[in-house]
Length: 430
Image (tube, rainbow, N blue to C red; front, side, top):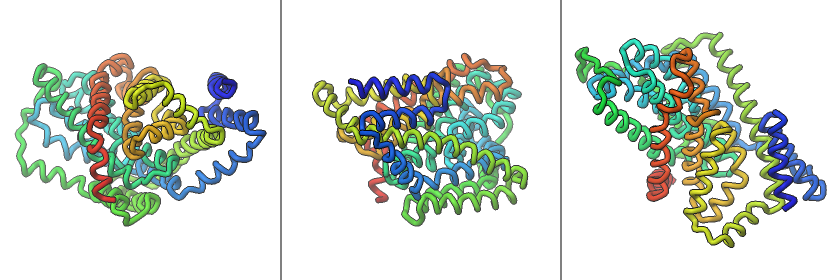
């Protein structure tokens, strides 16, 4: 009991003082090691060295840089122009384009926030001029932006794999079908909503042809080549994630300089922002590593498993409780922070109950995606509110995002009933 009071109380007190979350996690882990492991705080140093010396983790800053380079290259505008003719005559019009481009951009940025910002900055002004309902527009952008975490290459999968020693290639493969499934469900919802109320998305009456659509896609072929070369080389074992990310950065700089609008100044800005973002993520990983070491040494995951076994609760009841806890915590923490903070306990618990580690990675990624669009800390909501210059309030954005929130929950139910949806490709390729 004293251990749990120290563990939970330490986290609450440290977080309540306003210190960074990484510091709160690390300080709590050191307290636990000092008072309950005979002062064996040196174990934390060993754990930190082991994690940060991991070859897999070194891929994270490279993928962050890759996304930042493409974000500043103007490629999102080309992608939007390419997809627009494809959905011109479909009820919902450019709302479908939002989802499609978010899916495509998510495959190169690896970040939900970057995806929402990049596509939103192009889509919102254009759709506002055309008379689209502004709340519906930002709702589709907030929902579509979450696909950046699920569609590979994903920062969520990279960090999950590094912290749990799970195959990054298999995680990437596992995210493809669920990502396409969730994106398709978004489009079906938009289609039904706009059929019932056509005024939400005025149809474009300009003539279009198959030839025009094909010509439009010629604008984005370098981006498609980049995506498939990175993901394919990892999934088929031709390169490690770090090697693929390194080559991807070089190709992205080359492509963005010739085909996009990347300048030396924008490249410097990309490097600067990447360093800041990885420093934030790295500090979180450091704190979580110390906490994970402390709870592992004391056998906390095993104690939880024993308590769960004695409780008589069913496996799926426990899974439901875990999902509900994530949904609650998602109101207060951003997605990656939440995942890093909870993995030391949740991963051993779920694997101990017999769930596949790859499937767990997909599940956790989806539930932290929901946190990205859950107020008051839902980062996608705040970014899109800012992009609209507060024309659409945070409350209206949150309300418009509720259907996408529910679709994510429905996707979790489908993956729980049919786990092969996520495990089919990993099993086929490896």
